[in-house]
Image (tube, rainbow, N blue to C red):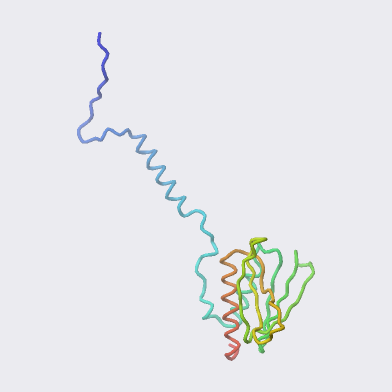
Length: 166
């Protein structure tokens, strides 16, 4: 008795790949396709162009950015007709202590800084005409997308200083 290799007859027009391997391969491709879109931050979704916003829309946007859940403190903003930006920072909950800072946006420089020690972004306002002026923090914390949106909103609010209030 001789032992040889078993041969299987194939139906004409088939590749010989078992159906289960085809199913496994399709499931794997579907999984990889779904995984490609996973992990993208939701805050990178395009928003309204800040240069087209009114002063009140910019303040509304800034107040919503300053009230993000991931921030250590709550940031609230008001601006006068003379472009004095009032920043109210509340530590912890609504009942925490508050600090109020007022800075002029006219001729101000808006900077975005990344702090390596706590790995958070800081948006700062510097009055360029006053050499003794200190940089005022307009928002600390948050990710890159939130910081970039805040910087854009502040820069556009500063541009409104040269225009009539609308």
